Image (cartoon, rainbow over all chains, first blue to last red; front, side, top):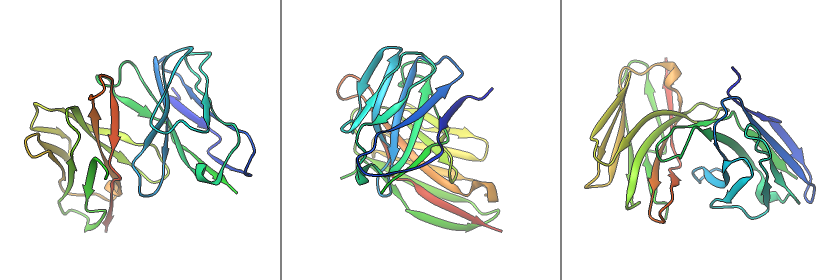
Length: 114
Length: 114
C-alpha cells in the first residue's frame, strides 16, 4: 500500500519555465491538499480539492494552477516559475472534511527555481 | 504576527531525558489543536489531536496538554529516544470563516543526542 506519493522528489528549474508536481494517493480519499513549507513560515495551503473536479484556493494560490480529473491524482502546476516559488511542496489527503478527519502528508518535493 | 507561536525554536537534549515543547496561539474561535512530528526530508505525521474541551491526550511517550483559557498547549516527550529527533509542529484549526483553515506553527526542532 503506497499511500500518498509525490514526484519528482527533487526538481531544479529555471525562472519562467512551467513545472508540474505530481501527487497520487491510493486510499480514495475525497480531500487533497497542496502546501508549501518555507523557512520561518509554517506550512501554508496553496489549493485544496474536496472531490474530483472541485478545487478551491488556499492561503497562497497566486502563480499556481491545480486540477483534479481523477480522485487519486492532484497535480500542481507552476505556470511560469519564479524564484520566490523555491520551496518544499507537500501534498496531503484526508478521508473527509479536515475538521474531523486526519490529514496524511506525502514525502514532499523540493523545488529550486534558478 | 503568526497566530501560532512555538517555543523554543530548537532544543538539544540527551537520550533518556524528558522535554516539553510549547505552543501559544491567538486563533479564536478554534476547533481543534494538533501536534505533528516531521522527520527531516519527510512529511508531517500526526501525533495527537485535541478539541477545545479536552485537556490532555497521550500517544505513547508523547503527551499533549491544552489550556483553552490561556490559549496554550504543550507537548511532553518522556524518556526521549534518538528517533525523537525531528521537528514538532503545532497546528490550530481556525473556523472563523465558517470553513476550516489550518494555522501551522513554524515548529520546534528537537535533537536527541546519545
